[in-house]
Image (cartoon, rainbow, N blue to C red; front, side, top):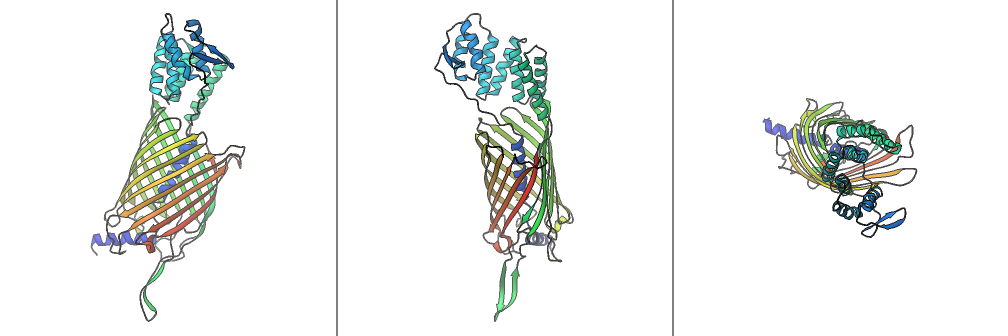
Length: 493
């Protein structure tokens, strides 16, 4: 048998006897997004008190602020302390025109106004200028340390808070500094979640039980096509997703992201001759690389390794590189884009179910947070899978959207849902299957839980995953529906 013919035949046969592992990419993304959401610090919107230009609200009373040092100096402090940001530009502009004014106070005010507007580069520039002008001013040094903290310059912030504590702050200010230092300790520790669960899957082999008679004579079928029937099974599952960041200097970090999840099915393939006997799976991935992080941007370069275990054997090892950029446009909007390239290398046993290939993927996502407890997100992904032969290689485009919402109340109910639609077209006609494969797939993942209903510190979470795959010309081989329901106990840390 010629090598190329044999490769095409093996790839086609593997697709028929075993479910694809591509769906695990959806679970990986869902788990990574869930972990990221649990550790992100959501910005709290600051409410400005409305007052006519040139006036100041203080303890419920409106005061006219004249253009004198005696009036403008306390007015600037009061405007800062009470979040009356709309008044600051006028106050600072008039203050700078007066002889004998403090440039450091004006720079501090402009810095905090820039911080409120989300312009952290300008905020840091102005505050560092103020620090150089009045290095002994405790308020300026405290605000500078807080800005470094918010800009994720961990080492500078720690040094700044330590310096401020030695400047004789009042007790309330010292308590504030200690709270920031505790927050920095929390930042520097491991974050993520772990979960275990039990459930049910109505189609672990992603089959459809399709039957047709290809050739018959006088009602007798001589050649028939019979696909495997769906196998339903109970299951036990686990998830573990961790993340830790080590600050190197300034905004530069070393980041670690280990992750693993798996499912054990109590049922196996009823056919003793089937290539695929046990559908239980386990995926482990370790990402370790560089991250540049400030108040508005996160840029990461993450090499990683991945191991996939299925059918009671190691199926493949993969090495990849992920480039990611996240940008915060405002308190409500965030954009991100990523580029991922990965090489799959199948083991000797794994080659009975698949073959080596390369995957290249680019995606873009937008997230909108209308409130502290709600997040809406959506994006588009383009994927290229390249095998040795064109018949198995494919191009894919997909779009996804989702919502996360935490409800008010002691129960702490939350819901997290994601929907995916994708179309995949293989590069060439497959003579073994008699068609060029073209699939359309829908995936829906919904999880809901109650953070207030803890069992031994664990949060109950109900998850439903439903997949529908239609092949426009090979539905007898690749069409299937699958629903998985699981009850999990999760701990976030």
